[in-house]
Length: 102
Image (cartoon, rainbow, N blue to C red; front, side, top):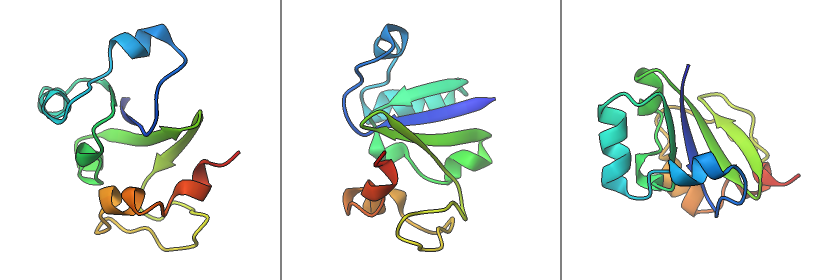
């Protein structure tokens, strides 16, 4: 299974992940283009539902809480999350912040 994990804050855990994280937009886009199986990144610009078409399951992590992203996903804000939504803009606008609360 291919996975794409976006870190919205610093990684404090697994040393393997810290050493294999793609830190820039270009590194992340190259990894997607090359079909890397497990992508860990800080690149919010690469986080869109287009990843689903490439076979990736999408996750975002904040404050140690991991949330899977997909159309129709449940959200604290009760908005119907659709493929057309701009996830980058929604994350920057703090729409999903409460979804990452424990």
